[in-house]
Image (cartoon, rainbow, N blue to C red; front, side, top):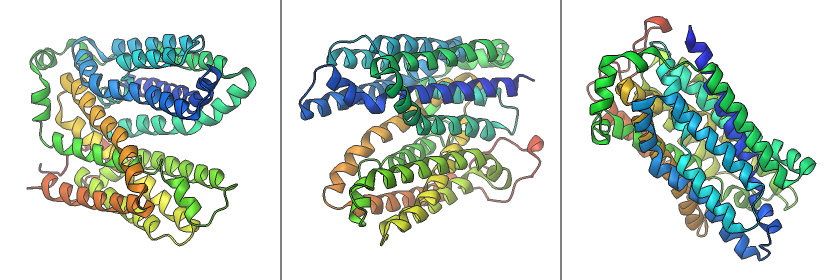
Length: 415
């Protein structure tokens, strides 16, 4: 059966590709300095522009690429994106000016978006009742890749230098491209099903947004991504406020980031097991509540040990909630429209990713604890929203524990 082979292909490609991106991007300020930008302020501006342009363009174009994937196939669209990453990453090793990096990052944003498409490919290939497991597996890879990338990238940069590190990143994307090309088999229903062909020819973004609970899941994904990314700008400052010496702040902060990322991967992985017992609405509501509890522990922290208690709770719950939201949205979208649907979900996620550091930075200038307090409030509001809106008319009776006979998970069994 091609399901396992396809899942291995997209999971490995996601892990390698996401790790390849973080292999070099954390060291971009150092690279800009090598290119002759010596003023610290200018380095910061160019770094922000270069790091921000790609997700901004990806957020705008992800639904468009997803729509094309619905019409012409997911595999060729992912291959197109990976080829562009190979070329752009390789070219970055030869630039001589900061604006060259910005231009290449802009081109990268125009052709990016394969992360959403790999989730779509996993959902397409999954047998009935296995969509949550497939999406969770790919999301686990997408979270673990960036967690390991900076460590590997630091070693690579030390051995071969920053310029050659970009060629190494290009090689990572080339490996991912080969895996998808050789291993992934487009599901038969996407290539041959006349009903799906009709869906692809008539679907519009407005019709996707009208699918049951789809807008609600976009709001959930935006909210979870916004909260998840709020830690980055302020966590090291909070660690310092809790009495950690300046020499130990990078180490403690790095460990906390790694714990949250690893816990998120665990949440992605085990979400499918939760959804075999209870409805997706129940899982999302519980995830938001547990994440709020983890953030509350961080808000009231008296010393850094409290952070080590709150971070795993927070990370695991965010991971589980994100997988449940993507799975729920995937189940209400016909297979022939999933590319456009997952593209819209990715746009929602990227908007949350872009806005969160800005809001956190502004709020953190007044009070760092207020950032985590806002997370608690936002997560509690999401839990109430999903409970009241998503489960309208439904119940939360446990599911059958036999995966083969489960229906695809909806927000509730009767929605």
